[in-house]
Image (tube, rainbow over all chains, first blue to last red):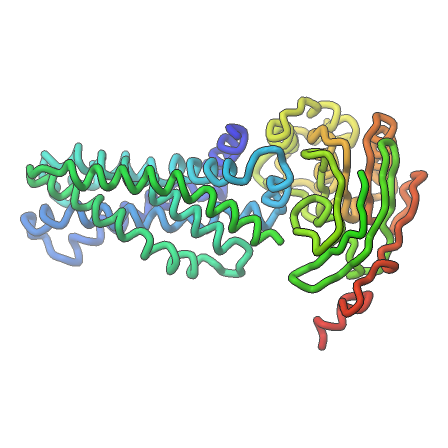
Length: 218
Length: 203
């Protein structure tokens, strides 16, 4: 299964793999916000955790439709279905590859963009921690959505519509953990909830996504 | 491998019924029939990609290597990388033999997107060797191959059969194999699409 992970990471960083697109999108969205809401540093500091979380979430969404679509188009997905590794394992590796290539760069870039939004000093660590805990859930839920829409022509938009409502709990607890951390309040509860969501979807969704792919391949 | 009274469906429409045949190690079976007669559906059902509508397939687990119309190649990976990936997935170490068998050695470091259609097909067929699986299910394997490459492919299939493998091949060309022929039109499901399969599409 590690071969699949390595291949997906290799494909992501090679030409046309889309690596860095999400990161650039995240950067641009975050830079646009001060233009939209004005340069009031107090206001920016207050909304910074939420903006950074929404930006990271949308940037994650950008690369979701590539997770299975390309493999479906060139026939690899069918061949993987007849291969000795279980489809659940394929799904898990796909989600992990998406997290490593699309979400992890966002987690690492978030503090830099926090400077642009005047994020309070106390908030940097909590922002990164909440993103590191929450983005795996975004990748996993997104992989499930990608499995649902694999094989549909222009399924990308439908994928966004399916996945965004499922992202709501992760977003709520993620921003809450980052915001409370930045304001110096206790934030153990939202962090635990966030970790719980990630653990829950990682345990359950590979089975659901694998079942959906088997149906979609028929 | 033994197939008994197998029914096949595609998208809920019955395509074939009562398909029965046996295939022993070292044997090849050629599937014949016009376009749309159900050859691909039969192969996909045996490969486990589609549930059978009825009947049984007796087959050792993890013994099938499916060669579909699409080759499952990644355009930005080189020939050797593509093969190495499938070899790693199947925990098999025959990459250099596969490169030799289909004369891909000079192309090994070329990205798959820079290959011609026939070269891509040869790479897709070389993938069968790195699966290490005994039963090859091949769907029109010789599409876009020139005469020399068809010869290479025939040789690879013969080597596979003499090593105790088996092959089920849907094809219109003569591969120079001693293969029994199974005409799938004999099993067309009643109420299924007419041979040719286009009646519905244009109705």
